[in-house]
Amino acid sequence: MKKIVLIGYGAMAQELIARLPEGVCVGWIVAREHHHAAIRLRFGGEVTPLLSPLACPGRPDLVLECASQQAVADFGQGVLQRGWGLAVISTGALADDALYRRLRQAASAGGGRLTLLSGAVAGLDGLTSAREGGLDSVLYQSCKNPLSWRGSLAETLIDLDAVRHREVFFRGSAREAALRFPANANVAATIALAGIGLDRTRVELIVDPDTQCNCHRIHAGGGFGELYLEIHAHPLPSNPKTSMLAALSAVQACRQLLDL
Image (cartoon, rainbow, N blue to C red; front, side):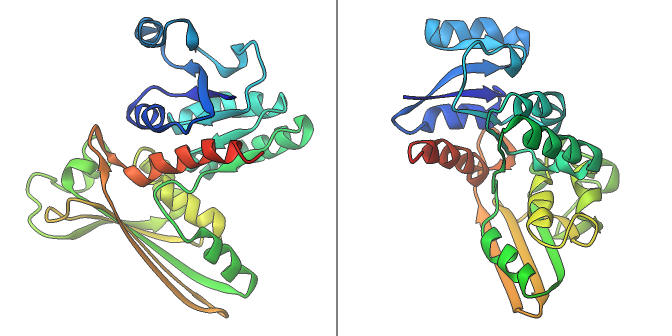
């Protein structure tokens, strides 16, 4: 039985727990203290709630972050220094160059492996391959319903109550998008890190009252030719900011443990 440390106890973590493949179990959950009683009640003695993954008394097969960019900053370095594998869904945290450098150094020194999950997007292998042949430009567009942009910086850039048709409310680099929209634009960082980098990857964030999906579009061009990719992903019912596909990428990371 493979045993993981799960960082987070929100919507994505709940989806992961519900879909864990046979042969993988959650041994420890890192969550705020007010969740600990509920975790104990739900799992009994099978799962131990923690305030930090570094308090884990055993050696997990994987530490899986399904929480936030802040969780990556708080715990990532320590996990990798211990030689543990760390899979990250909140890839936007790596828009902070200093943090990304510390994580790489910790992985090198401690022997841990840092894995960036694909999250809500696909085709990253093609983008990485295209880079080898000369990747000149990458445009990423994220289009969501107004409800999915609630609680984000979008509320200060556009009147989400008044929007009646598809509108672009942000244009900038992937680094800007990941840092300014930490709960909505991790995909921008994932694409940028697979392609031409956080500063050269262009991002457009869009609100569309007529869509019920989280739509992701990539257009890349260069010496290899052109790449177009479009995904219409269902949002998590309990958190419309997050695509179902992002949670499924975490499930897949657990399934891959069974092949080791």
